[in-house]
Image (cartoon, rainbow, N blue to C red):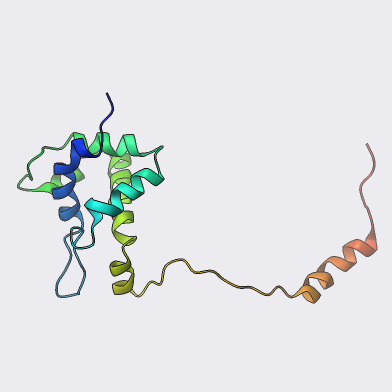
Length: 137
């Protein structure tokens, strides 16, 4: 039986808050403040549905109630599991518009590049002038 997001929601609530607690002095919001558990993490799991079962399975191994030292449980994971879990939680957190604004990161932007065709032709013309240099086989 596969683990669903709803099955591990209690674990995710304390886990995301423990991993991304926010910092009022720096103006950084917590995971809960930016909706990681409600919106961003489900979106990340849906986007990478190939990895979602592994992430949910890792989280299912945690207790439902917040432990005294939640990050000790994360630290006890294998390096691969810790990296996978961290990428999803941190990735969801960093996908927040509020977090991006606080970090001064504008997100992905379209780049309108005007290629310099004269420069391209200048690089290609000697090759065209040389002609084919391969022997038919």
